[in-house]
Structure formats: structure tokens, C-alpha cells
Length: 331
Ligand SMILES: Nc1ncnc2c1ncn2[C@@H]1O[C@H](COP(=O)(O)OP(=O)(O)OP(=O)(O)O)[C@@H](O)[C@H]1O
Ligand SMILES: [Mg+2]
Image 1 (cartoon, rainbow, N blue to C red):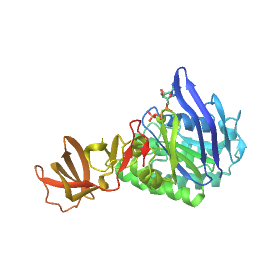
Image 2 (cartoon, rainbow, N blue to C red):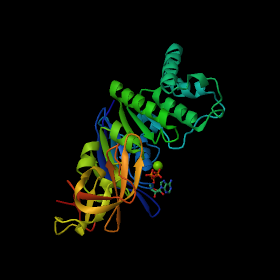
Image 3 (cartoon, protein in one colour):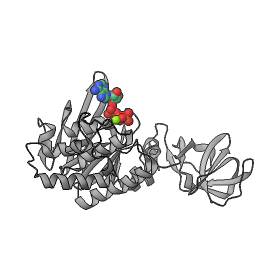
Image 4 (cartoon, rainbow, N blue to C red):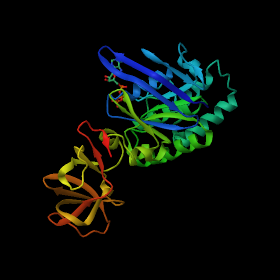
């Protein structure tokens, strides 16, 4: 497997700047998750690494080798696309075999069978191997397209929201399987998701993209606990970080415009009065929706709380983040 390095990558489509001078090193054997809202440049980044699209400026190297001018096949990457693309006239088995049957690889037949069987089992799709690719549910098609990447043993896996159309149970099963595959094989993965839990649990590193710029790169914990901006802080955490005017609570630095409070950074029981609007029991978590000086806040509380709508609860911030008017972190 291999380290992937992007150096000064820019890409525009007409007047749309999709990537703006992105420099990032994806360490060998790491699981890097790209985060950012729609249009941030996540898919474009994967396409640049794969060689499906070429950057306007910058270099990409894989395993220390400059990839400029090399085709996707020569780059030895396996990509799972955001929109799954199967060969509709082929069966599931034939779709899974396809990457191994390339003349370049020359994989022996029993090895192909073993690999296809193993991957089908991991993806819980063994019972559909003889179905036509079109005779599948959306989630099954998505698993077959993941399978087509997993049967191979590429330098780098590129995956664009591969679990997005699966139900919660399958999603959490496959999250664990993908993480295991990566951990056991030492594969390098560049992975796009909007799912908080996927990002927090699978990533060794997270890259935060904002309008084509890489604004922060670090471990999920670093991004969560030490975000460089209100934008980066808002990418991780469920419920989301609360962002309020800084002067709502005492103690803000003079250059702070807003205070960022993660739900767990709101202490209940002392401080100033707030109104309980709603209590949400989610099973593993109980969320408290509060109104504080005309601002909505979300925090978490004890699962056995007897608080209810209309109650008054005292709150105070603990370990808040402060941000300036432009959204940058201030200390
Ligand atoms: N082939 C293309 N032609 C024109 N514009 C494009 C093309 N591909 C991407 N863009 C533009 O580049 C920007 C980044 O797009 P990209 O697909 O990388 O976003 P994304 O982060 O993957 O978003 P999403 O979460 O919606 O998939 C967007 O403004 C998009 O409209
Ligand atoms: Mg995309």
C-alpha cells in the first residue's frame, strides 16, 4: 500500500473553483475521511487522485511516484463512486469478477472464486450472486459496487459515500467490516461521508474542505476538540455545536464574536436560568432543547431525567470555544 500526497492541487470548472491549492498527505495505511457540505470539493478530490480528472495545477504522487499523466489503471486505485455504476447486463458474480479478469492481472480462476466468495460474504450479498445487477435493491447495488473495489488489492481505495443508501443495521455492520479490512490489510483509504459516526469511528485522519480549500487536517479527536474555526467545529458532533453571540455569557475575550458550546460543554444545575422547550429521549442519549435569552440551545442530559417542557434549568458554559467575526478560533 502507499502514501498519497497532494501538492498544490487546484481545479476549476468554468468560473466554479472546485479545489483551491489543496496540499495534503494521506499516510500509508491511514483511513482519511473528507468532510464538507455539498459542493465543497470532496468528489473532485477523489477524481483527481484516481486520474479520472486532471488538476489545473499541482502534483499527486502515490507511494512516492509522480502520477502526472498516468491513467486510473496505471495508478492502481480502486474507486467506489457516489452513484453506483454496475454492468447492468452482467450478474452480481460477473460484476464482482470483472476487475479480477482484466488481462493485466491474470488472476487464476480458483483465486477469483475465493475472492468473490469472501467479499460477497463480508457484504452480505452471497445469496444474490446469480441475480442480474439490475434485479437488486439500491442498497444491494451499492454493496456490489463496494465489492468490486474490495476484490482488488490496489495501492489506494477511494470511496465516495459508499454506505449512504444502506439501512442503519447494515451500515453499522459494514462500517465495522470496512474498518477491519483497512486495519488488517494496511490499506490506504480516502473516504467521503456525511455521517458523523462513520467519520468519528473509522477515520484515522479527517480533512475538512470549505469551498475547495482544505481548512483543517488532523485526527477526528483533534478536529473535535481543537477546531480551527466555527466551520470546522460544525463538521463534527451530533447534536451540532451551539454557536451563540459571545456576550451572552460572562468571560468572553474582547475579540470574540461568537461562543461555541458543544452539547456536553453546557453544565446544568448552576449559572443562569434557561427554559426547557422539549426533552427528546433517543434511548442512548437524552437531548434537552433549551431557550436561553431568546436563543435555542441543545444539550444532553441524564437518561432518567424528570425534566419536561416548561421547566427552568440553570446552565453555565464549560470549556467553550470562542470565534472572531470571520469565524476563526480565538484563544
Ligand atoms: N464536471 C463538472 N462540471 C462542472 N462543475 C463541476 C463538475 N464537477 C464538480 N463541479 C463543481 O465543483 C464543485 C465541487 O464539486 P464536488 O462534486 O467535488 O462536490 P462534493 O463535495 O462532492 O459535493 P456532494 O456532497 O454534493 O457530493 C461544485 O461547485 C460543483 O458544482
Ligand atoms: Mg460528491
